[in-house]
Length: 209
Image (tube, rainbow, N blue to C red):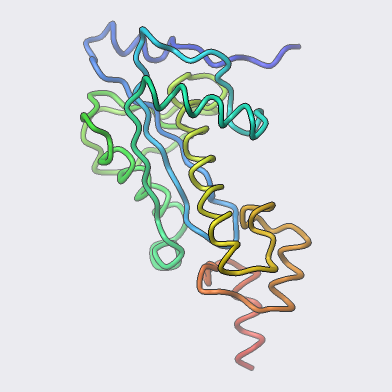
C-alpha cells in the first residue's frame, strides 16, 4: 500500500468555515538528550503549494533542503525553540508547547486557525486550533512545518558539534545513539545536555556519589 501523501484538505475545510490564514505547526527534538526542542509554524500560500511535501522523516536531507527554499520563498514561516535549561525546568512536553507558541509568535502575520501535529494542544494560543494525529503525514502545512523545524534544528546541532567535538551531534542530532551514549560516558555531559533526561541524570548522580 502506498504511503499517504499530505494534502491541503484540512486547510481548505478551515478556510471554507471563514479562516483566512491557516497555519500548520510541528516540532522536532523531543527525544534527543541535548540541544533545544524546535518548533515551526508555516502558513502556505494556496496559490504556491510546494510539490513533494512529506513528513520530514521520510525525506532525504537533500530533498528537505530543496523544499525549504520553496517554502521560505512562498510562505510565512516562524521558528521557536526551548532551551535545555527550560526543558529541565518545565519538562519536555511543556517546553514543546513553549517552542510552538514562540514559533507562532514569530510569524509575520498572526493566524486565525492553527493545525498542530499530535493529539494535544498548547494553552494560550492566539486563535482556534485543531490537533491532527500524524498530521505531518496528512496535512501540507504541518508537513512543511516539520521540514522547517528539522532543518533548523539540525543546523543548530551541527553548529554545536563544532563547540563540543566528540559527541557526533552533526550526525546524530543529539539522539541517544550508541556513539553519543559512549561519548557521554567518556567525556561527560556538556552544558547543552538535558539534565532531567534519564541517561544524563544517571551519569550526574553516579558522579556525585
